[in-house]
Length: 266
Image 1 (cartoon, rainbow, N blue to C red):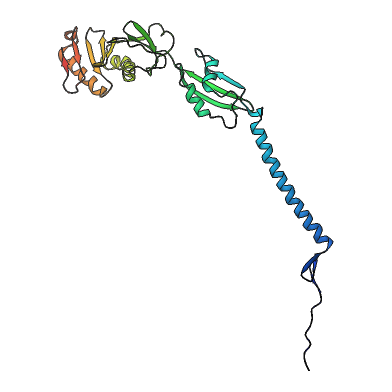
Image 2 (image 1 turned 180 degrees about the vertical axis):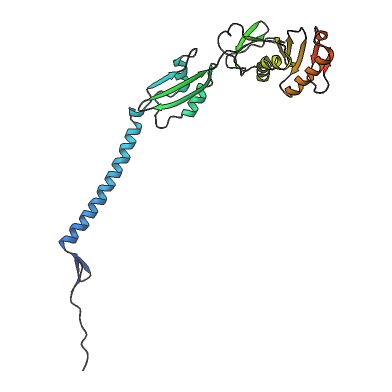
């Protein structure tokens, strides 16, 4: 007896759905679930687009634009100069390049250091450390005020400031330019080293491009030191020569210590 071939029913059941001749028919519950999922996805996409658009609108709006710069620590520099150098008025507070603004402010002759911070939502705070007049760079007929780093400043040096006399023609210096920094640093250190090491005081500082720094002591003789290299050795040689010759015998003479172990006494 031949076996009957079982013909499947046109309807086959699955969970929440049935198939009719290759088509899937969903029940109401499944249709609602899929519809909710689709709408949630659409809603999420719209929310993302809206958030991006909102951030972009907030970014380009004037709400986060710099319209106030608070400047502190200035004495001789004006707040207007600092604001102009910063160059950030109207810039976005989010992307303002504070490092570049700091560099521009520190290019002002009287500014030694500047710090900048954001003051949300529309401001900046700038703190200034000004350069302090320390000495006079006496070049020819002109006297230039410099700080302890050799930067030429605006205005006069304080009364009693150290004077470094410069040999040669006056080439003219502008605020912000820098004179020989080694000479300035050496002069500053010698005001302390010479009294401490040799019980002498320096009464005059002279500088020239070929000889470097020369000092005159209150004992009436001069010492050519050149630059700041090997200063400890130069001071040791100076002590030995003074001990050998006697301080009184050195009056009116010049001791040249520029050439290491070959000092010259004239």
